[in-house]
Length: 399
Image: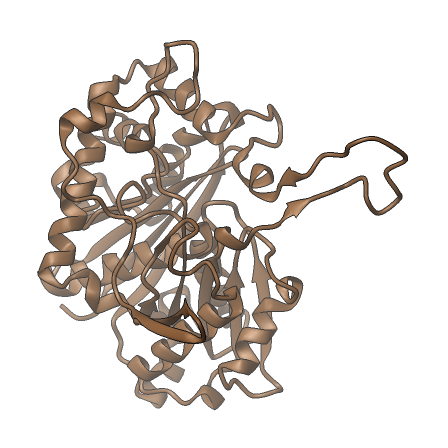
């Protein structure tokens, strides 16, 4: 089997819930099962036809966290003799789930797999390190588990501080970042109004209290009515010295959600009747200085294009994760990526960024865009906390 044989199909995701809101009381495994079953239905597959599931998540939540990939697989109906794998690659975790599923197929260990990922940051626990061996006397500290995710493991800076470092080093302005944030919100609003985002969403029932549930159908984080004036009024979120440029309005939102894609070898996909929507062409992961981790997409994209012999102008569509607006400004400035072909349906700033799901959401978006427009290639890229960049290339098969 050659690398060109990896088929991507039948993407589905939950709506993304705002931090502490609609998905707060939904276990991560429940969200995973929901999107897996939605993908299976869209692919016309029976769960028994799937032999492998890869689940990506950056945060361990709930009692089943270590085993969540296997729990999702069996609860979604996959056979007992199927296998499951959990992966973590910081903000590229969703993309890594796709790549890891593809690698299983490439190595002959799988034929039809599911790449799944998600987060429920609203359920991340507080931690008390002193309790296990006994706090001798006096008060002891509870540590927010999210602090482990949002801080650089080397400098202990918040990820927003690394965005400030990138902003200062290359001279990006607050106005340019706010302009990107406004554009992201407006594009997400238009994509919601047109029904584009609804096509990828599998509505889910969520608790409403008193034993009742309600149908959760649309992303909860977008603020399409926000104004330039409101964005300009927001205070810096990470630098308190008056010098900061990064705000809540030009940073990604903390959201919960899950997403799924069918990943299969071409021969197996054709035999099973899976729609041949796109193929995974190649990927690249590179390291950058941790203190400017937002620079990561630039060398990752450069490496990917070099591997594939393509140029910037050969790519019909780009999804570059809006961890912070400066990430997109930097990729745009360094590579000449046209804004009119990038993140046309919103991004992390407007829709939100649960890392386990983000790369899959972006891939689904790119697949739908290529199918709608007849384009051939799309690149999905993101920066990764700890100092890396990742990029994947897909090709449209529905031209």
